[in-house]
Length: 133
Image (tube, rainbow, N blue to C red):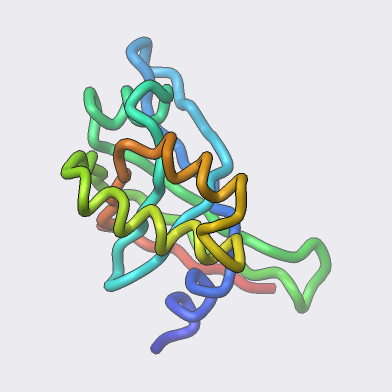
């Protein structure tokens, strides 16, 4: 596994940029799962990010750490996203995402988030940029 993939698997917050109706970027920090060279974000179809992806599949993202060299590292990319809506697949992926942040799906907050998740944003990056200082 290369250093980019190891980094994306180890980090917890990704900033996702989608494009709104008026062509304005919408940027939000999200929990995510990086698996098989794809990024997965659980959400609800009522969120702005999901609505934006439905209308415009082009997205950007960034994950970074550090403020002082030599501990600055980051990955950003651009690609296409689609909404996964199949209920069983959504719940399976959402559980995997939540288990990165909670020790158990039985946690009250984890249950609430799982119940609220009705879609997964699947991102396939076409361009990658990695930096470190």
